[in-house]
Length: 217
Image (tube, rainbow, N blue to C red; front, side, top):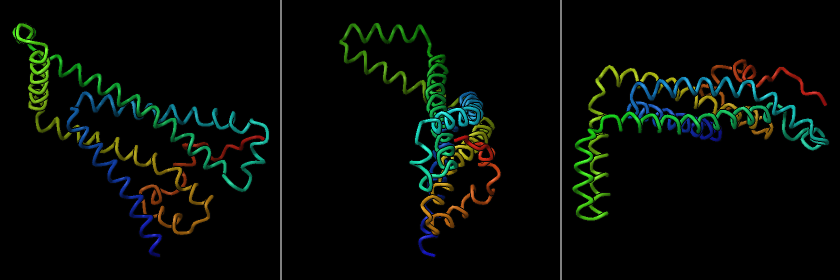
């Protein structure tokens, strides 16, 4: 019983941290950046869905792989892990794209004439002063970018960030269902049932990883 409670607490803590960081990031990023992130995360999920069976078939086509894994690691665990790795790869790309977009949006707020005057004045002093001037300017631009977001922009960003975080948290925890079964640890299996993943049942993850497809030996 205690093991189940601890396991459930750890699972949900991971999901909660993903939720908090996702919402916080969405509020800071703004509507445009968060919308791009939401679209790319959904596309990443679709991409992982189609790529998972391709990679799993290639994995199991390796000679002797069934013999090595038989009774140790189930195909569900392999497929779930492959799906998660693809999703995380797409998510990493998404973060890079969103950072670039946010950087460009902040940069657009820069006054060209004012910037040229600051840099010219700094260069006349020394390189260190130039760097300090650029850093100070960038901080002021980030503040200006934050001030441009109205309350309804923040509300919309929060809502989209919530959706992104729920999707991400669900994908991260999904393979743990099958890993717990392979380990034959009752407290890991029971603890999983007290998460969002556990409440939604098995149909969604089984659909995502093509669990009904049989891998030919």
